[in-house]
Image 1 (cartoon, one colour):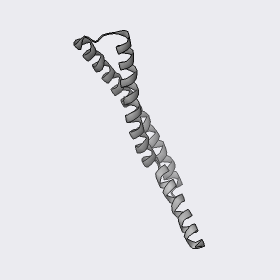
Image 2 (cartoon, helix red, strand yellow; image 1 turned 30 degrees about the vertical axis):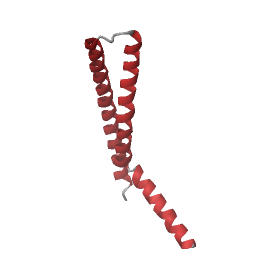
Image 3 (cartoon, rainbow, N blue to C red; image 1 turned 30 degrees about the horizontal axis):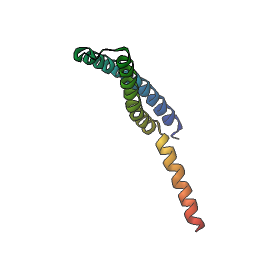
Image 4 (cartoon, rainbow, N blue to C red; image 1 turned 180 degrees about the vertical axis):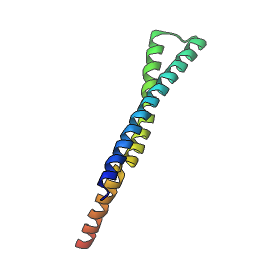
Length: 98
């Protein structure tokens, strides 16, 4: 039976997802730091510019990369296969009723 393999596959996918989230957070912090250095060099250093940059850059990086990480997690953990199996069974059942 494939159930033990599925559990270990999901656990491995969860570990990889956690590792990806840590790297994404680190990348977000580094990009915020680079953006703040750029603001300082250009001379647009104000409280509002700094706050907007920190929030905008960090949230954008987390959102963009996080959604990609979730897509990879969904595929690696078997969730996509579960949905594909469920919808194919439903379409077969509905096709027989016609």
